[in-house]
Structures are given as C-alpha cells and as structure tokens.
Image (tube, rainbow, N blue to C red; front, side):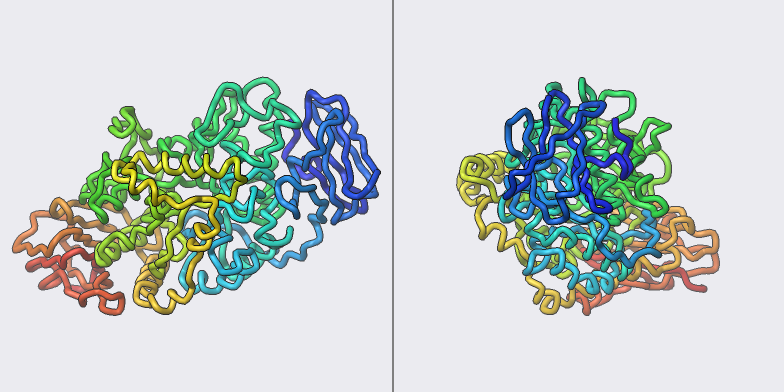
Length: 623
C-alpha cells in the first residue's frame, strides 16, 4: 500500500513545473493519459501494487485530461481534483500550492465546547456556492456556532444533489464554485474562529459517473452489499486499491483544504474483516496529516456501536463522537406523539431524556423491537460530548414525506422546552441550517439524475418512507416530491428574510448557545458531576453538582402545569446554606412565550409550580 503522504499521492499533482500522474489499475497492461484538444499522450510506467506512474512538463494547471486503460476509454481520473464539466467530462490539472492561506495560527478544534451547525452548500444561500456561504459566516459566529458541518461536497452528477451520490471523491463539486472555492470558505471560517468539518461517504459511490470499475473491478466488494450501491473492497484480494483510495482521500481533505475534521457517513456499511479496520487506519492517518493541528472525527452509525469511540489499541476506531439517533427519536415522539416506523421503541417520556443525558445512547445492547435484534453496545469512558444530539438533521427532515421540519409539526412551547435540553445538556448539540430561526422552507431529498435513473430514485424514495405506516398510504405516496425536479431543490433553499421576521426564536437559540458557552458550570465538563431524576412521567430535572456549591438545575416539563406541595426527590434540594434562583426560562416573552413563571417558592424550600411545556434553569445563590 502507498503511504498516506504527499510524495505518494494518487491522482495528478502539479509541482515545480511538472505534473505527475498516478493511478491504480492492477490488471492493466497499458495506461495512458490523453490530453483534451491534443494528440499528445503520456504512457505511464507500471509500479508496485498495481499502480501506474508518469511525469510530464506539458500539462500545466488548467490542462484537461482523461485516462485510457488498455485502449479502452477515455475516462476521467477517479482521483480527479476538479471536474469543470461534471462527472462525465475531462479532469483538470490544478495547482494545489497556489492558494494563499492566512490561517497559520489556527490550531484546529477540540470536542469540548463545540456547537455544530449542519449546512448544505447548495441550499444554504440563494447563490448555492462556497462564496455565497462565506457571506453568512459572520452570522454563524454571532449566533455562537463553533463548528460548521458541511454535507458532502464531492463531485456528483447533475445540477444539484445532497452529496451522497459522489463519484469523484477528491474533486469539490463544480456547481459550488471553482477549485479553490472551498479553500476560500475554510480560510474565512478560520479567520472568524469557526471550525469546518466535512461529511464524507466511504460506504458506496453514486450510480452515475462512477468510473472506478473501469480501472479495476477490485475496487468493489463481491462479499458485501449496501442499500445504496456496491460496497468498497477493504478486506479481499487486491484490497489495497480501495484502502489507499479512501485513506488518501481523508488525508487530502484535511491537508489540502485545512479542514478541521470529518463526519463519516453510515459507518455500519463500511465492511472490513481484516486485522486493522479501514476506519481505524483512516482516522489515524487523517490525524497525522493534520499535524500540528487537532481534528475532530465524528460518525453516523445506525446501530450505535459505541466501541467505535475507543482507541484502536482497545479495539475501537479512535472516533471522537457519534450521532445519537436515540435522543432524536425520543424527542420526536415527545414533540409529535407519533411512534410510527423506527420511532416505535421510544416513548418520549422523562426517563428517556434523563438516561440520554447521563448515559448517552439509550440502547446499549438490549433488544430493539423495530429490528428484532439487540441494538448498540455498552458505553465506555467519559460520556460528555461524545454523543452528538439533535432534534433535526438532513435525514430526519427529509424522512417526513413532504420534508417538513419538526418545529412545523410541534407546539412551539414544546419545541423550546426540548431545544433547551439539547443545548444545555452535556452532550454535543447540532443544529440544522435554519433551525435557529424556525425556517419555514421544507428540506426534501433531491438528486438530479438522468432519465434512466430518475424514476428509479423517485420510487426508491417512496419505498423508503413507506416504512412509516402513515406514509405508505397511496395518497401520501403520490405526494412524495420528485428528487430530480428543480422545484424540489429550489424550495429546499433557506429564506434568509426569516432570520428577521422570526426574530423571537432566533433570540431564543442565540441566548441558549451563549448560556451554554459562557456559564462557568455548564461550559466546563470538568467542573461538575451530572445526575437527574424524573418528577412525573413527563417532567424531569438534570442537576450539575459542583464542589463549591455552584450547582445548576434544569427542570423540563413536557406535560400540563404541575404543582407540588411536597417533592420527595433529593435532586431538587438546594445545597447547604444556599437557595435556588431563576437563571433562564423557555417561556420568556421575548421568545414568544407566555411569560416567565418561577417554579420555586422560598428559594426552593416551598411549593414547586412547573409551567406547562417549559424548561427553566436555576442556579444557586446565598440563602
């Protein structure tokens, strides 16, 4: 295998007046570079491990080229750095050293204290470009966001796409701007104190424009299948090609674009039975590529195998944090009432939220009825931060048949109560773009495919959401938007005027994020021990215990108003010689609430009155 460093890079690399080409085609006899608009050809020399290498001074930046393999083709470079004419067009030579970075003092990102914000570049702004997104970086900084999580930006077919149909994984999507557009975005983000991580897809490639098999069938596994396409071959004969491909790709995004980390998509469908799992190798190589900067590696793993968070020497992958679907599913049931589809094993009751805050995942090896098998595995080590919690994300919004956001389907006061829990609890919160101002636009699944694929993708989307009993109804199925239609994409774009017209909910999120980051207890996971208790079936408390009696108490009531003459629960007792004082309420009138009602009398030693569907934060004060 090739070492994951710049001297052994795969693809085309221009440096010091010459371009070096390296491509993997282990069964080929002859591999040639064919230059667009020229009769010139460059025959590459075979190397070890199935690679072909060649160098020329006649291919400066801007040169368009393709490969021919044993006189078949020509095809674009599977490791192309830029595809100016799309997935089927020629690849372009770029000067990767030409960009003038100004982030030399940037140290990277640590997990503690992060607030993630997921965006899709094509729908985040009217322009739908990296440069358009730059214009909103100041807004995100002022909101209190610390890390931007980009949905995949690798080259994919058509005029628009979610990004999970990427086929040239080294090339930023040309629809989003020129080759250095992403570099400008990251550089400006760092200048404003914002980290940027990228969602990457290593479990499959898209169905259109995937030329890997033209270079070698060994890129793909004969053993494993995924629900989206062929799995990559990481553990069978000639697996070195696919392993090099993804490891170098991860290092390339980190090193070339100064990214602060990666979000690994659907890791449950990345199969490897070898001695060192490809994920562990990839994470280790990416961290080395980032040196001396620190990077964050997060993952989506549907069965929530928490051992991935362990270091490789303990059998893990060295991943920093994982998406916590359990929290979302419990929150969705609490907000909407429906337990349809994969929500069936959640109740949305107080116990689930206390357990999420204290233990991370709810399912840690016990039976999961929806799949009729055990789900998850026991959590190890510190829990704070390593579970990423969310009320909405790109998948969960689009899994509603019309793409409605959850705040459009829930009572505003209930949404505020649970958003407060998400933004104040110890786990790492994630907002989906526009969530902070209650964006009214839908966010549908969209993918601009050719005619042959269009109906297949549309039918596949209908079949997928048909797992929900309500959405399997024929009248609902008929309403599922066509992913290839331009209007499906256009109506998924944010309307930024709503950041002004929906000022109350924006203020709510801004205040909460500021509180999370500035409160001396909540902001410091080393300063407290967390515990919690249920007060009723739908009301609960979380308590931050501190050695110096600077405790915090979050009370969440997801039910009707509750009044307690007496509460036999030690979790609410104020510390010695202290009393509780109101610090924040989700029902503040400035948020659109009905007005602040303090839950306590006599500093917490009298009656307790919990306003309906609300959250309040209490802090200690001298008695």
